[in-house]
Length: 168
Image (cartoon, rainbow, N blue to C red; front, side):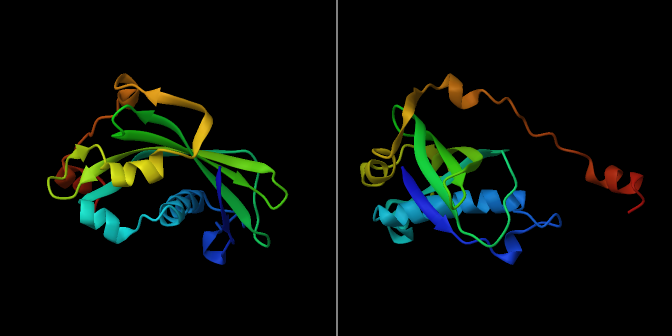
């Protein structure tokens, strides 16, 4: 398991004076970027291969409040991966300075070809260091059906009528 130590800043707090929900998402993203760097993968490597990681969805489950003053630790483990490596799921656990698990986040991601803007499998030079290790004990192969379990579709609106309705 990879752990990333993070100090809570004033800007990470919400009006209730505890860690804001947006900070959890930022900490998860920061942990993934730090992990990439520790595996020797940087921005220039992604640019060279013409790929970029994309978050498809994220969710966080909160167990207890966290306040500033002590560092937090965010873990990262791959817990599901499609056979070709196109889709992946990463679990992040949030721990206080005593090892208490105060939240858990999960994300599903994919890889984007930066020229065609299409989903692709990453090249082996990216896949192996990032997805080939650091897997959870409950790791599983992600099926195509599981990548489409959330059936959320866009719903456009007639913006002109909506703005008129609210008197804008």
